[in-house]
Image (cartoon, rainbow, N blue to C red; front, side, top):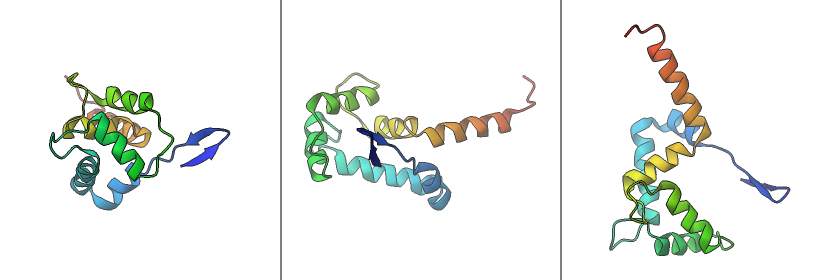
Length: 115
């Protein structure tokens, strides 16, 4: 990720990770990421655990509102935190490479299928 004109240039490594690791190992890595960010007592990524982790990862400039926005983006059940499943879904949803590859896979898989 490089800072260009005050914004971040996002490089999506997920497709290459899946190609190198395979789907199952990739999901295990996502789960390891969840474990790194989660509140151990609650088993969820909470605002507090995300804030603590952001400092640990060197992301000192993230404002509370930005952290809350991250939680809201992935919070499917409305509890204000992310479960492991919500986290993994969010990570896949935020990967432009995975989204475009999955569309191609669906199109190629179901091309010509008569229902």
